[in-house]
Length: 203
Image (cartoon, rainbow, N blue to C red):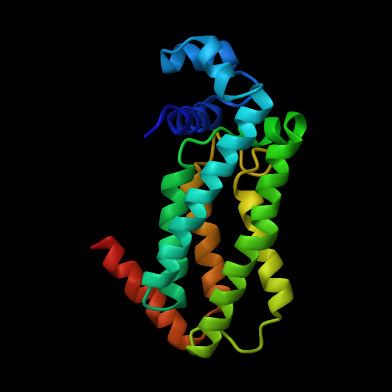
C-alpha cells in the first residue's frame, strides 16, 4: 500500500470513529507518524482529504457489494450477506461523522449521495427484480416505493435522532430493519428460505 492510499484508509477510519470535525490535520499527521508537510504534499486541505477518503471507501464498498451480488445463491442470500457486510463495515461508526460531512464537507457528501442515488439504487432494484423472478418476492410490489424505502432505511439506521447510539447498536438496528423488510416483501417460498438461512446462521 502506497503512502497516499494508507493516508486515505487511516483518515476514513479516524473520521468514522471520532467524527470529522474533531480530527485535525495535525491529528492525522501524528496518527500516521508523518510530518504535516508530508500530509499537505498529498492533500491540499482537510476538505480534499475527507472527499478523497470517502471516494476511496465507496469505491471499495461498491467492489465488495458487486462481489456479493455475483457470488450469492439467490436474491435473499444476497440481501442477508449484504446485511452482514454492512454490520461489519459500519460497526463503531460515529453518527457525528455523517452530520459533520453533511454540514462541513459538501463535496464528500455529494459523493455519498451519488453513490446512494445511483449505485445503491440499481443494486436494490436488481435484487428486487431477481427475487420476483425467482418466486422469492411478491410480484405485486410497487418497485418505485420499495426501492426508495430500502434506500432511506440506511439513513434511518445511522440516525442518532431515531436510534440514539447509547441505546441502540447499528448491528441491532440494521439486522432488525432488514428482517422486517425481507419478511414484508417475501412470498411463502421466500419466508421458508429466510428461516432456513437464519437457522444456518444460528448454528
